[in-house]
Length: 258
Ligand SMILES: O=C(O)CCC(=O)C(=O)O
Image (cartoon, rainbow, N blue to C red; front, side, top):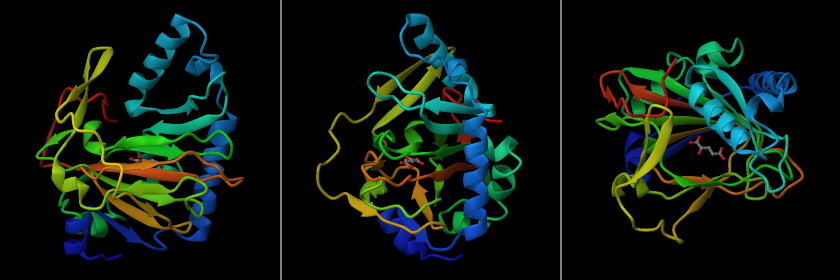
């Protein structure tokens, strides 16, 4: 599954069509649906009405680094629709885990510069029609920091992703501008540490419209985002984030890996 490493170094992303077969896409979607069907929204702090439910939501998130948990859409008025499943499908789920192994993706990860890849985080993003929210511009290294910076995302489209249903958007070459902010944790509290106060540019973003089964390899410093789903179609995706074993994991990362 080769791609041009020079192109990746210049743009900060690469697209690999047909990385997953239609049968694999179907199996991942069915498995995610089963996890969501079995989920009790009250366990995640819903409805979001009290300080106690807010605290429960924070705990639900902070404990999820080595577990499989559903997270709700943050929609005004409250909703029980699932936004995503995280953050250790790659470690614990019988369907997602075998597909997430570094062995299978060693080649694109090597082309992206990782020689000893280790999966540390995974997410199924539902982005359902009507409720699937936007993902604000960010760099994955903000949330998963190593020295040197090695975070690399493998993002799999589990349906055709286009502008209407909220495909990824990227700022080509933006990974060369450095890290803007870090999300750090001390015990049960988290905060952002700003490293570069300049706002994200308005221009230069390009939509990464890809068919179901495509893989988008994302450099950990590449700014990316997605819009809300304005279509009548879901836009499910599965993302696995890798770091290189040889890099130093930052102990103030929010995530305690599985
Ligand atoms: O799927 C999306 O809409 C955003 C995913 C993302 O930001 C990521 O995988 O890092």
